Structures are given as C-alpha cells and as structure tokens.
Length: 312
Image (cartoon, rainbow, N blue to C red; front, side):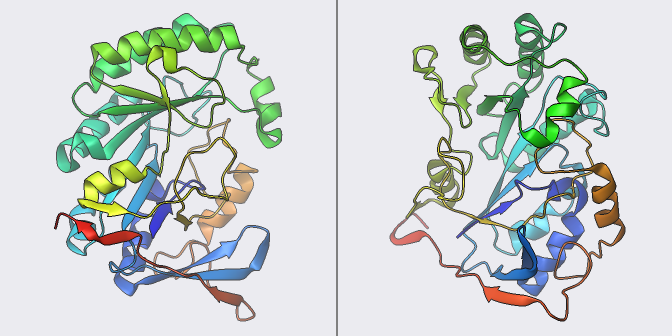
C-alpha cells in the first residue's frame, strides 16, 4: 500500500520524530476526521508499505532522518511546495532563499526524480497578476534547475473555510483567459529549465502547452522508484479530477503550523496550537493519546507490488 504523509498536515516539517517512532513500532492510529473516537490502526511494516509520499513546505527537520528511514526499508518521494508568496500569505515559513537551499539539499541527497516541485496554489490579486507569476515561476525554476524533473501546479480553490481570509487580500477568481496565459508562459519556462509540467485537479485541458493532468500519488513514478510494476486504482476518496492512485492517509487536520491563509486543512490557528500543545512524539496518535473508549478498526494493508514484474 502507498502511505500519504500527509495531505492534512506537514509531517516532515513538524512531526518527523513522531513518524520515525511510528516506523520503529510498526503501526499508527489515525483518527476519523468525522468521528474523533473512531480510529484506524494502520500497520507500517516494510512488507506492506510500498512507498511513502511526503507532502511538505519545509522538509529540513526531516532530512537528517531519511537515511534511517531508507535503511528500515521504506521507499519514498517528496511533494515539495515552493511558491512566491510572502509572510502575509504563508505566515510562518522560512525565507524562500532558505527553502530553495533546502530543496537543493534534499534533491542532492535522494535524487531529482524523487523531489516533485509544487507551485500551488496560484492566486491572483491586483499585485500578484499573471506577469507576477511568470516572473517568479522563472526565478524559482532557475534556482532549482537540475534538482527536480517535474512541477505540478494548480489554481486556487475558494474553500468556504478560507474565503474570508482570502477576501482580506482581495484574491480574485482565476479566469480561463488567465489560466491559458499562465499555462503558455509556464510551459515556455519549464522547457527552458528541463522541467515537465502537470496540473493538479484542474478540469481545463492544457495539453496544447504540453501540460498533462497530474497524479500526485503517481503509479508511474512509484514503479520507477521501486523497479517494480504496481497494481494501481484511482483513489475514490479524492476529488473527481484527482488522478492519484489509492493510498492510506496518516495525517490529522488542524495541525499544520505554517499558517498559510489558503490552507483547507486548518479551521483555526487556535485549534492548531491546542493540538501542538498535546503532541507527544512517543504516542501512537499524532495528538494526545489513544482514548480508553476508542473504537479501533484495523486498516487493511496489502502490498500493491506485482512480484512477477520486479526488476529487483
């Protein structure tokens, strides 16, 4: 099975010590977002975890742990979000110059194909117009040339929980004409810096610009990393436009401390702070401890590797 760590929070940035302890113990309890007393017990054994997909805006705290994770027998790759936004939007992130250095360091350690650049989401305001994004996309692409092979981008979705925060900086709906201008410009830049482009959960067809629809949890990339064919099927728990293969999510909402105003996974920073205050790196759950009256369901974990089509 593929494990997502995590669409709901930044485990590499804030909880890598906890994750390492979970791998040593071989399991984790994941709360149901809609029923906090219901937990899934997810086995994290190398025999059934075929690959980790790490989602992050700052993997620096995790880099020193990657050798041990690899030595334990867990393959992985990273989705690394790197955008042009400042502290008014991504409140607690390190400076972009530091994040670019981290991107290069991570890529040097694990290889360019295993660090996917996310330019996500694209937001438009009077100040951050199409020209702004073309300029900054090229600056970032030039800075990480050779350190990644792929970029995935998407346009902002106005989730209800973040609409008021976005209104404070006068974010505008992205029109199709803007999408096409950005796509054409990004395509020209990406070709210059040898980066393949994809969109995440976008209905618009941009194939005329050599831009494909992405699978962020990507069966082809996983097969390349594993040297083995995998049995993949679409993840039914994601949006209709999502191309990701099925995975098991081990993160928890309301737990990412980056403070990005466009984040759909946090409802309020006060809740995030409360969760962080009860985080125990030794606990089998991300926050607090397993309740005595918890209802536990064993999550079925089966390897998706095809043993008859493995190179090693």
